[in-house]
Length: 599
Image (cartoon, rainbow, N blue to C red; front, side, top):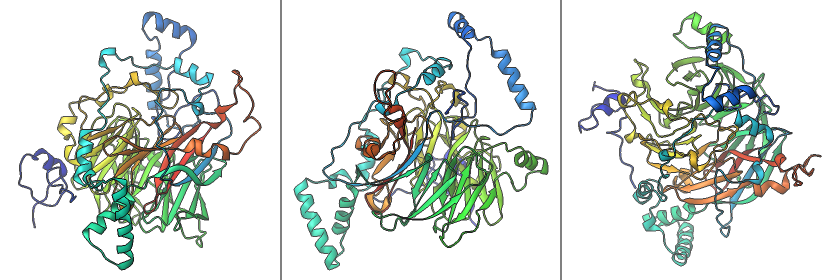
């Protein structure tokens, strides 16, 4: 039997060409062929669990004059008291006021639509007017001041590394295959004729790819669905026949989207006794089961069959195989963590979860217990995913400690990560794998979306010499604005491409690769707190900006306060603040569904 070795071992010997075994490593990855009240209690959906610090007026004035904080001893005493006492469930409040509605929007192609320009992150936005309470909150926050000399320029756009990826054919057809409009129309006519005649050649295949690759959804909304609760996430199934949306009323609504232009609602399931909201959901590869989580230790597993009206099955992630009874009681009885992110494995047998106790859990559905717990981060784990759809061995986890860690389950005896992606200067909000075991996409509270290559990850030994907590500024993305002056580069950034222009504020905003079937993953896209969906080319240039806020403004249900003037005499636009938290691109059609919050 041939010897095998871990990803970490292979990485440490990446300069050598000799490899043994079939385990994944940077050296043997194959090349691809071509709060509604004034209390401001933090943590709404996946944010850091540390409560915000406030000052009274006298302390604020004293701090401004002396630069000293007189409350350190009190804080230390409170921390010790919290450590010794029993943990209790955290109460979560939203940062916005008023009745909330969720809208799911389906957007289709409009070839004549003009590409919209992105709004600066720190600019004025009609849908994002801040109230006086938010201003007072930001005054009471501590925030690390950065020296003016430490403000480097953002990465260049277009990105040279991104251009190389586009030309390599790894993410769809290269730019060398792009032609002028007249030749493209001729190829389209020829392609349609060959399709009718059943003629298949390499050129025909490329023409088909080019036609579908350039079809990007527009800002014209075809279907709009309103809820009475905020929508936090939603996704199409891999085959495009199924769509689900998760809302703050703890309901998951399911739709038949086999015809992407005519949705049919057919089922709703509930998360009983949930806390704050449904934080995430994941569909099994065969579309038979839907797993969904809240800020508790349990995940609900429900059948998607409309004829199956049985109650969802509860999966307790605190029940960890191999742990002592005392540890189990501590996790189960005190509700010490909530779940922020979950994903099914490619074979549908396991579910991975990122939690508020700074850990990654792997749950085996057949064994009905967690088979692995990895306490590998220094802050909340807001996002997790499997690295390869064909293998459950490689895991990615993104945390508020600014790191993405790579875990090889075949070498977990020392509970150490196989490698680290370092480059974000604030916490992570989402990670998404391309599914090829090589490329990963992430969104961060530093307003950056980054593309990573597993072959360029940092080794465990090298990352141990760097303290990631030296980079966060104390910026609270839920209530504060992020200006251009706040940008800070990371000296050890190992990402391939950085994408900027969207706004990662208010909530854990998600990002994705475009579908491999229709677009060859030629684009990456992200929701944004400015009410838009930002679609980027691989070289960080903007492919299109879909204005969800504008497309849905006239369709929104009005309440009696909608048209009342504010103190400045203008309409009460605060009611219509729009934040696109998640978006999903249909795998076979130029259709995007955007899930967003209206406050």
